[in-house]
Length: 349
Image (cartoon, rainbow, N blue to C red):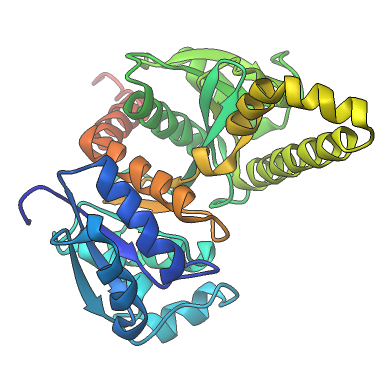
């Protein structure tokens, strides 16, 4: 491993590719003077941009790749076409080969997950990986998972998600024991499908070092009722997209209302500080970066349509995960869970 912290970047991923990734890396370089970067992508497209960023001078290595995975490529197609050669594959493989401590890409989510599972494999005891997102709440931020990796999950997988999300929350917040809740249609123990109810029973009855608070409902996510909200990927992705859409709706309606009259515009001018604080709090760029949990390495997915600030935030998340030992925490916690799930051997007759 190279000296210091090294982050591998898929320079061709996302809607804008190098035009966002390179300035995003420069912002991250300014925030983290001890971090270096390896950029994988088309040298002709990446190098001119990187050479203009003084903050990256002497802080990056560029590895030329000829293939870029398209945002609409199917995961199976991306695996066949990009295996061993694409900027996305090489970025992930840098983590496996010890050339980088973490990988960050704004590329195709399905392809990134498929390649990450193929290259890095899952940790022992993990059946399926999960994507965890940071969610702005009234109390600060919560970790919500899964937001799209695993559609449908049984009780044991939900239990694993709870363990992984709790470990990520500790890495992000420094809390010794974050609170955990299972997303359900009600807080009563009799509500929900059998997998959710069984996962709740396991979390209550197993001797886990987890502060399990029971079932939480959809409105509890924004309230920040718990530090970690656990669900399966279909529900989590719908909730995430609904929240993003609602935030855009609020800002659009508010902007139209402000422009409705001179009196409204005058009031908005007087309240501009409050509006700026609201805009900053709901800014998706400040919460960008979904972490792929359950892999033998750190992979962070940036939103494909973000800008340089958003991509830099995703790099920040990757750095936090590495420095706080996310993979090791998850491996140890999952091993403990599975030791508790082993059947007790019968006494010899």
